[in-house]
Amino acid sequence: MLGKTASGLFWMFRYLERAESTARLLDAGFRIALTRAGSSRSEWESVLTTTGQLQGFRQRHGEATSTTVMEYLLSDRSNPASIISMVKAARDNARAVRIALTREVWEATNESWMTLDKLLSGRIPEADLPDTLTTIRQQNALVRGATNGTMLRNDGYNFLRLGTFVERADNTARILDVKYYLLLPSISQVGSTLDIKQWETILRSVSALRSYTWLHGATVNPRDIAQFLILHEQMPRSLAFCYNKICDNLGYLEKDYDNRTHACEMADAIRTDYLGRSMEMIFDDGLHEYIEDFLASNSRLAKQITADYSFEVTA
Image 1 (cartoon, rainbow, N blue to C red):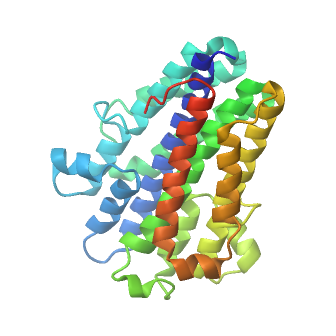
Image 2: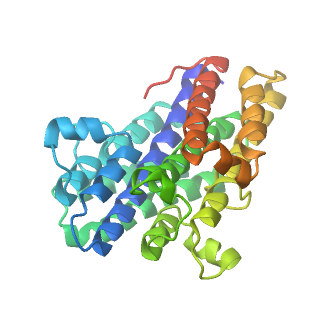
């Protein structure tokens, strides 16, 4: 496969995953803000921090409010990290590699863009935000469903899956880090009893509340949540699940091309070094430090994939 095609597939699905993650974070921020008796500024700043947009937002808007954050991350077409910008970038990449997609995947992607372009053409009233974010997630699910139902499991499929899970691992790690480190009054309170509704909202933001309660019952424990989002191999947005899939897809490419790349070695090392630890080891070393190191390693892997398969990072 040409490097340009591999790049288009990889980034198409990174953008789709990132757009959905941003929608989930906005939903979590909105729900948590509703539980606050006083100012909810810290919740909206945490959403901006998780997406890496806090500095850019402050330069343009100053103090974070629900209205300005929602507009900046949802429908601001001048912000390349807004949902509408990322959906457009995904559609542009899909159009560039249309020959590598089935008709169903292209049509789902194009329809998603047209639906959201119309939906996000004006300011979204706060009362309409939950329905708007639900529509964004549903449109993304249509693309994912068409992909899983119609694409050949060939090298192109492996590249788009790599884009999905590299991005998903990054997003899950950032969500967990922000909740544990940035929103707590002090680092000494890590592991303490926190507001149950807020923790439930964090689980809901990664579609994990129901599955968590199946395993742990109604008790919401921060340490168990961390374990669930990091090490639980059956949870589709956990770091362990993502890296099992990354290693699988890199392994399929190794077999297809008869070449074990540096990315294969790096992914195996990340899975062993970061996801072979116990939660006791992770907490002893520091959860925030662990996540920072993981994020850096995940970023290096993405760059190595682009180097090994001759395409460039575009964002």
